[in-house]
Length: 278
Ligand code: PAF
Image (cartoon, rainbow, N blue to C red):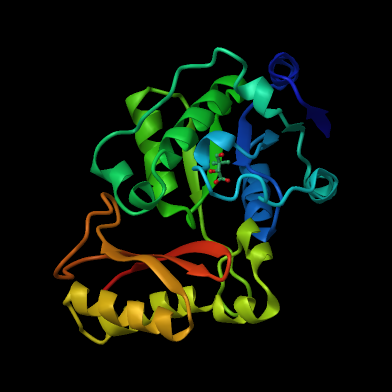
């Protein structure tokens, strides 16, 4: 496994790979969710590139860029046995050198709602870094977790709009035994907050139960989900019952919907979602 930290060295290492290249972009502090993407990529591609880069451009002022967990040595130990060919670990200066001034803005309602509304500039940072990483790594396939449902759709839009020749492979959310979606941000939780964090998944399951029981009024479902989250002491940013492709709010449930939540449990802002078929 080769560790490279500069763009020229990454390009050189990439040029030596023959056959299909799979790419898993990450911000490090890897957990089973990331590792499931790496394992899937390994099954489907001849070669594997993983990037570790806590992208400052996707964090807003006052967000957790500084305290975002980082442990490169641990990440490398986790990746080594999985048959990764190259780990790309650039510095912020390497990715955003002085004079950098080109940004990718995914406009339109998809990017403006939900995370886009609560984290202005977030998707601009994601789209820009992802496009840069695709240009640098030039993968055939790239693997994204379904936990970041809106990010996945935005990256799809980016790839389609800018004709980037990469196949996006969505991979299922990996959960802890109690249902909490794996996330590097779960490390912010104290033991008692960790117990309460299951609220997000419980709210999604309650939406599923209501829909399976025949409830079709999405506003009623959203209200009940919010109540449940509050009972656990979570501070709700949003609860959404949305169209799975456009993420537009649904009023009457007539087909599959994506239930999404974002809520604070103590110092951690957590997100989760569940595809529900009536
Ligand atoms: O999902 C993430 O970890 C990040 O948003 C990504 C895709 C690596 C871009 O920084």
